[in-house]
Amino acid sequence: MAKLSWIALPVAILLVFGACGPSDGQEETQTNDDPEQVKQDVLADVWERVMQESEAEPKLPRDLETGDQYLTARVAANAEGYEVYYYLMDQPVPVDDPQLEDQAPYLIADAIVFDSAEGARAGVNYEPEMGTGQPADLGYGITGYMDAGAGNIHLVWHEGRWSFLVHQRNSEEAGDEMMQLARDIVEKLEQKRLPAPQEVGAGTFDMKGDGAAAHNLQWQAENVVYSVRSRDHLQLIDIVANMNE
Image 1 (cartoon, one colour):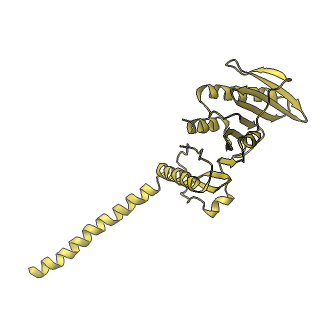
Image 2 (image 1 turned 135 degrees about the horizontal axis):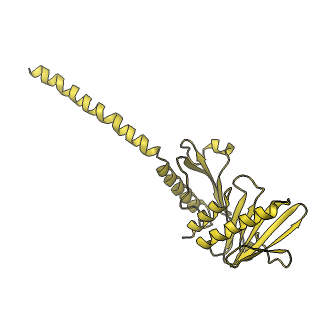
Image 3 (image 1 turned 45 degrees about the vertical axis):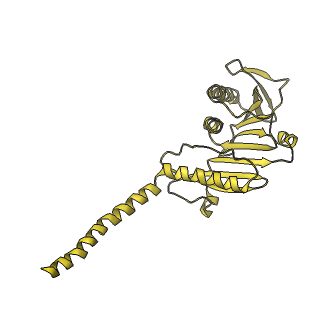
């Protein structure tokens, strides 16, 4: 009987550890494959890299809508600033993985450090007040001015220290499309507050653009120019406004 007890004991131990092992491993895998946790890890990793390697204070997304996809990024940072490309993938991919070089980013955030505040101001694509052009009522008491030439049409307006420009190829429908997009932007800006530039900020929305660089919000903070670019103009405003909260 004693022999049977000693034989049964290790078998029982193996059964216990065998039952626990796969369960624990499976739970860890599920945690690592959770899109929300991956997103938070990537955002924290990017922030830490920029903090350590760049002289520009990070102005980066605090959160991003990723759905059931996985966020990842490529980071380049040094004393002259930083550039971060964000990607949405179907599977988890480490930050700075070489395969990302062949992927199309959906959001780009960067900063450029200038020698002076004056240099940074000049580095912002600020649109001066237009003295000519066709007035356009954009709602909320804001008037834009539309001008056409060389096959292109522009719609410009100002809110505080920000200038906004919508660009489109000249066509019969261009004016109406630009007016609608501009009104959507103005309405969104009534709900969201963008960062207050030291002197100037500029929003550029290219209706003929494609990819992450299509729309750009750019603003000056002392001797640094910050920029965030995205393919979705309204989502871009949400992201930058959330960075400001």
